[in-house]
Length: 364
Ligand SMILES: Nc1ncnc2c1ncn2[C@@H]1O[C@H](COP(=O)(O)OP(=O)(O)OP(=O)(O)O)[C@@H](O)[C@H]1O
Ligand SMILES: [Mg+2]
Image (cartoon, rainbow, N blue to C red; front, side, top):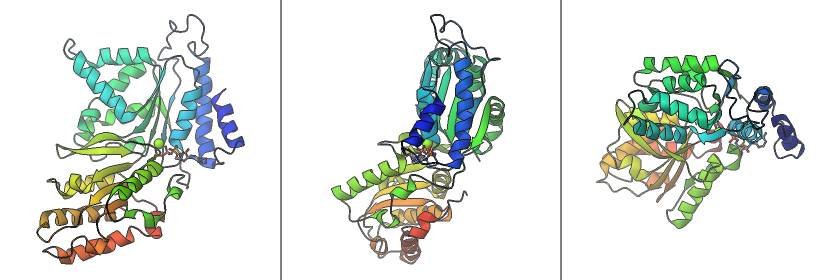
């Protein structure tokens, strides 16, 4: 089946509903599917593997960006499944970069320029690369993607990728960003950039705002958080990632689809500060904070960090999913930061409202 036939079949079966924004992206994917099928390799046959596509003949890839839950991954996966390419690879962007770093590490033992042999190996394994959720938060990634993808494109690799931001907004405010700019220019040169700007978040309809603050703690709360994570990300587990903040690295235990998942201990019992919380608020649209304990008056530092965290998330209109031992007002009843905590409690209430969850998420 071609991509177009598969897409039409899904619509006809009512597996998906009609969406004008998705139609526009599907047209681009159909174009690319046709061009790939017309490539020597796509026609198959006994010599297919020998007839490498040349960079001159390689079709233009696709960069699909848009807000969460619009159907980018759904479209890319359908395209990938049907793509008439012998050697193809579909992988999450972070997993791909982890693989790249591991290969670079091994190659550096023998080669001065590790990128060239690693790119050659990657290109021989897959001529079509579908990378889900391109997101650059890590200086180690930012500093190599330009040369890496230049080498991949030079070997005729076709890239299709999804992202929450247009190329120009990748690695925004990142360290040494000027060294990253050639990658943006390369993406613009080698890929058609399309926005999937439907108004509907197909995932979000699946949660009710008042159910996003789960209390009290216990196995039932943990199970509920698990269920909310799966519903909001369509994935059982996210990928670990790291965000660079002024030269430090902040570990995010699980991230997927612009959602991040932390425990209260990860964020408020560790020596994190406003810069960390702002970076989290900037990077993610939904943040899970699990197992908020009842704080004693003496837990001033934890309370202060929690106040700063909620302020950062609130200001960035980030959606919060939390599990807590107590209702918001009772998390930190006394202590030095008690007065300020009243604002936090009120914000936690507002962040559970349908209005909050319905509000368009603004970028900071
Ligand atoms: N037209 C549609 N009709 C019904 N469900 C849809 C439609 N498009 C997408 N979905 C479903 O909505 C969910 C979100 O889609 P998808 O994961 O592709 O979004 P996304 O744009 O990749 O989001 P993110 O940026 O968070 O990765 C998926 O479960 C998908 O199957
Ligand atoms: Mg996606």
